[in-house]
Image (cartoon, rainbow, N blue to C red; front, top):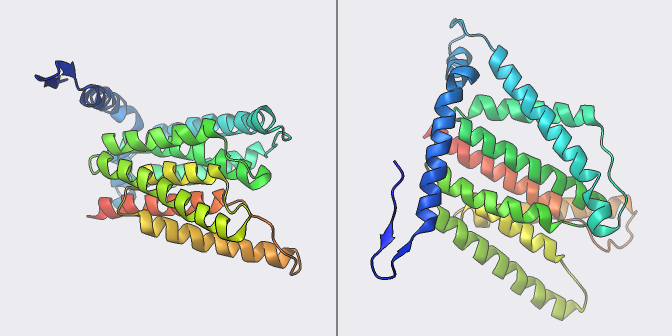
Length: 270
């Protein structure tokens, strides 16, 4: 039942709670409605107890459809955003490899998380970070049109998940963005040259919304470590020549994806 939280002092409706309750109700109904079709709970029983006679046809259809949609979305984004926003050439990818990637990652997600809402949120996360990863790796840009939805979806993830904490997510967004701006600005003042693109700040803040403030040090530490590895590879490829810059977005995305996965696995095991 949707509850209205009324502020007697200001006579205003607290829309945050209203929206949260509304979306929780809708997804709860949607989860119950599709539970019999997807048979995810039974699939888990089959995975744990092989003797249980369960058909995987519906589960395979679910994965197949989501992977096709994800491949189509990724292909369209990469063929539209670079030229539209950065005057760069459109990025062409092999649709077959992209489809296989989404099938493999989607299989892990579906069989690990026995919750339709979690699966949908993770596929939404993938459909945003995969294009961001490729665009930054190929062009060095991180489009706001993908970064901002990633941030807002992360906040919704914190609202909808049973163990989510939207307050921690908001603190993580503010702290990570502010900290990166201050540190980078100080380094730029000392070295007299740019150090990090502002798109990286926004991507870090967006990923922080998914992870919360407690995981922020681990997320940033791993991202920095992966960035150093990437820098070392570029240094060796250029045969000891000076590396001017590297795209930091891939390291940020890999770090955020790993810690988000580990956090959810930990909550499932507990």
